Image (cartoon, rainbow, N blue to C red; front, top):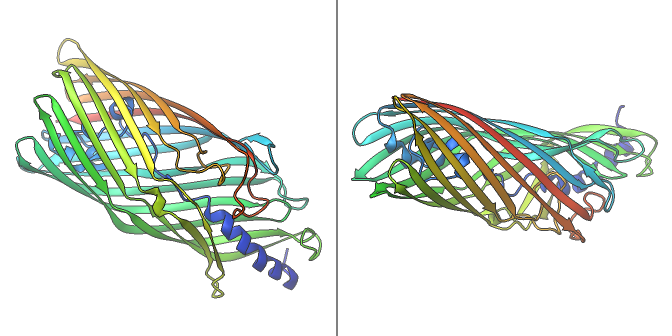
Length: 425
């Protein structure tokens, strides 16, 4: 339908409200609790004091020093999630669609000298979102989605330098592509469908690693904060009847932009081999500075420069990883490496700022198991992870636009299946 002058005015007004709400869909803790490598997922994730292969480009670049000559890693981490939330009204509970996140890791590492190892990794590092199908926002805006998908893919060339003895340092430079796809709206009034993306070359992660000092290892990493400007367009659909501006619905396309952040992150890890090359335990802690995301804006880039802002009130993230590993030695240089792990993640959202397609205001408890078969230069691994959490919201903060989110139970169920192959030479 061609947009009339009246509907243009309605779009102008509704856009302010939509910009308030949509911004809340993409901020917060973007980092998954578990990522890549059957061994590291099985140990509870993020074990930066254990990693010593091509996965180091992602976890801890200083860990590249553990590569003897050449290492290749290929990983598939399939993430399955399902959200639950009240849609359209208070306590009108609805179960979302199952979402499939086909995460991957491709990486290699090569020793240049006794003191220098280089590597590269390609992988998604941020993933967030969910989907509810067949959502009716008004009489004339029906069978839409309530969905959000934010993904960031990085290319990370890395280098590790041996300082002395078991101590090494490393750095990875991270070229990234970020893309947001979102549909949301105000019930009885409007719906917006946005797509925005951007390339950037601002990412860095540094690390240090004290490896196997009489069985003890320790590591420390720091990821620098990254700010990105996403650009694209938004299709706005408004119900003219609800706004007393006519009949039916009218749509228009508006160029939009948005600024978002990947917060700074500190990680600390330790590991100890109770029985050399047989049994170890590992622990890691990570702090993510999510409070830097205080508010977000969605901006109309048509020249009018309409924008609005909403506080997000996120908490800083605190995540703990604990794992144990036992190795069964077989004949002819073969072995089976088994891992069991646990992850605990403090919630970064708050119950008065709920969102149907983000993790709720509840602590995450995740459990993982893994096994890896090693035969000379080849390694084949599988890992499984499960987590579930939910939170009850009784009051929505008054700064959240009316008709967007409602009191009720917000939940998230997640599974991860990891399969990987490594070649060591």
